[in-house]
View 1 (cartoon, rainbow, N blue to C red):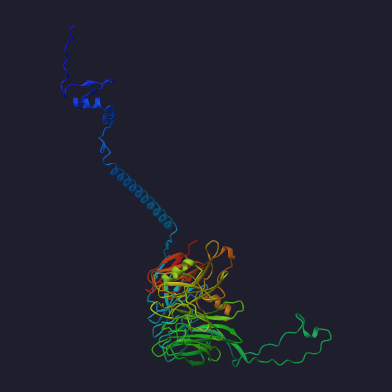
View 2: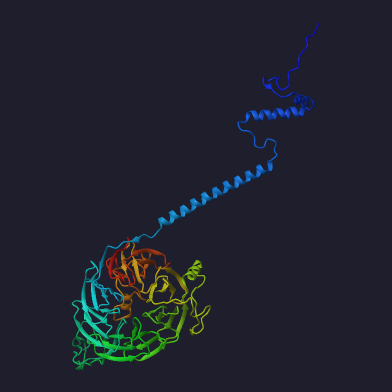
Length: 582
């Protein structure tokens, strides 16, 4: 049987079908290699199958660039990790910002703002009482009376020269120092002059009022005889009582009377009777008198008057202690306190033994604590600039950023006395006793409000007001519902006792005010003004800002309180009233 001959398929055109129905276009040379190497056939089939199933061709089918591919994968993973961290950091910053925004101190807007007819030249005074009105001295020589309720002002008194000193109010009398060297006693109700005393130089110092034992004036009535020994029954009704002998009344040789003590720019210090203006004594100091005088306790009918002296080209300044009854100099401090502009010191007791101390600051950044009786330095510290103080506050209580000195006050411990970093402490201090201790608070020209422990000078906290603080702080105590229960009286008025002075000034013994409140329900604050357009309410214990009051100009005056309202007089000549938040 003849077998038909078969022609081989043409190379490159013949296709062979596989058992699964797929066609193959492999050339003849490939078939020969496949027949020679079966493993190559399986590998090629696998590659062809992967290539057919993939919608995209492989970039590296043979694995030539495998190392570079893994590097790219790791780089992509790092980019993804960095993106995740960036998103988490952004979310964290957003959460912190929202938390800070929720806890921010919202500025308090004023109830009313009234312009004054003249620009103020010295701190104002709010005497208190039913007819409360701010007494504002001006450069034009007028003493303005500004209503505490509405801000309406009127001229109470006019002098021939500018009024550059803070007036002193006692009862219905206002003692007004004038730049022409005259001290006026003015009736607070109608502005009439009761008496005046002229000195040889300008008076730019706030006076002080004390009560001292003076000889009895002629014409006083003789006091009645003393009562019988048995209360409620006359001497003749007592059994077996002898006839009463006639008693000759003894007229006392001295009596306690108020005395005004004032100073001027030539260093002259005078003592005048508050009622008549009669000169009692005159004392000459070696330098001009500072911003204000301070008075200690009245023991044995004679108080101590503390007179700050300014330094200059011909004098170093310092502090004098005078006997209020005679004007005799008891002691003085010159080389330890140097200031070209010295605020009034503050006097008060710190320890339980009741021994008084005198606190004052200087232009070299020093803060002194002196014994009021002997003038001996108890401690002396130096204020540091705010950045260093804030860094030290990170470990509150662990170290003192102030530089203490030894008991003699000669050699400072741990720092230099003065230098490029020294700051000016020109604000009047506040000495206040709280349930956790007695604190001394004062401001500086760097905007720092510093609170120290009055016992040893240890720094407790600082606050940055953003502008110079040259006014004295005001203490405020709030009740459970936010009402001001203490601190509603203004600064220094005259008083007949140390307790009254503490009530008037907010000094060592405490503030005066309307009712009492339990310690657990009360909150103690400090009101502070600055040379910037803002005043602040600070927590007395921590120094944290509680409220901020935006003012129409520099709030360089001491804040006042009246009927749960904060009253301020700005340097630009505006009187403003702010509500206290509930």
